[in-house]
Length: 77
Image (cartoon, rainbow, N blue to C red; front, side, top):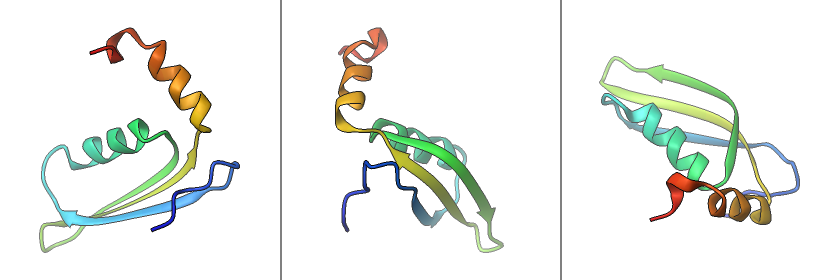
């Protein structure tokens, strides 16, 4: 898998997983921590208790990701 481009291109991330409470929240949080700005999300719950989540994301440049984490009081651990 290639890293997502940071030149302003939009990348589609598709996740198919067993559905459970909080799945969408965890996926969105993981994308945000990885430096993605979520532009759109489509969520489908299937009859077999699985979920299909499709995110359109744009990656922040690495320098912006670092600056935001460094200046975030709740991110210091």
